[in-house]
Image (tube, rainbow, N blue to C red; front, top):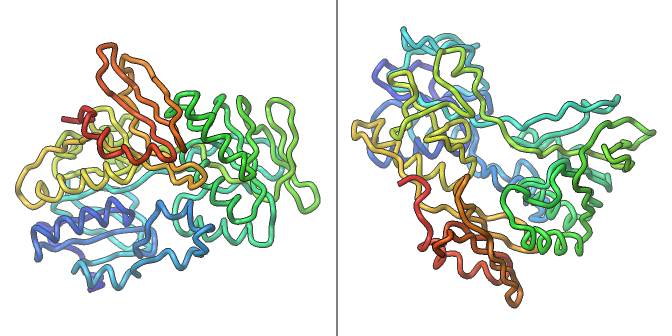
Length: 389
């Protein structure tokens, strides 16, 4: 049902129609079929798999084909009210109302599933404003339109998203240059030997790397874009994609007086510093952790839904390995906790790489598995400590 009537004061309101918002609603509906739920989103309200954006080209799927359920289908399936294309301007925490460009709406319990924005680097040159980011399906549609009929794509950032897009684009027939300030791919996540293995596999299918430097300027040069790097290298490309990382969306929370740090600060029940307001997903920070991955979102939604329906539940995070979608060398990473004491030990195995991060006492605290070694994922995950016990 897609209604435009506001929720009653006792109802649950979610802001944001990404994976976090919709997963919370699905979990609520497992527990309570009748509580009124309103979803407010600046997007069209359809459901799609965001992780597929960086693999769609090789899968021969365009943006429209990534939509699994349109807005009307989500509203009917979950029995919710969807206010799409709706901008939230402010939250009145005293009056418990949300002010939008479609009017004001009361809330009983409010969930901020606002997501994160791509970080934009300050760039020089008359084509700096043509650097693209892909953060949602509409961004992806623009990106696909821009690369149609082109041959060369430069990617700023050799992190998870940069490497996944590089693999996807090369397989799709594009020439790809990847630029990163770090000395290696996945600089924060991989030990050097594992990074080298990934770089070699991606190089073998055509990716060109430019490490320990950054992009300084982008200018028009006839139909092409001329890129100058900080180390003096000049590259020519048709499209520039920026994938240097994410920053949680905090402005709405800040202006409402909700406590923020790197993300919107929540306790183990995912409640913010303001009563009846919760946060989840890429915008939320729990115990100093901001984890913009699928598994933490699923885990958080399973904790938040019972809390919202009357059974207070604390969030726990087990070890949650992250899959890097690079078919040239499939990779699974479970990074050690920030500041963990220990060292990496890397072993080359037949058809893959196994890196273990061990404490001085020999306890497994993290791992990287590549190629054939990914078969050990389940077994090694059992040995890891919880991220949030």
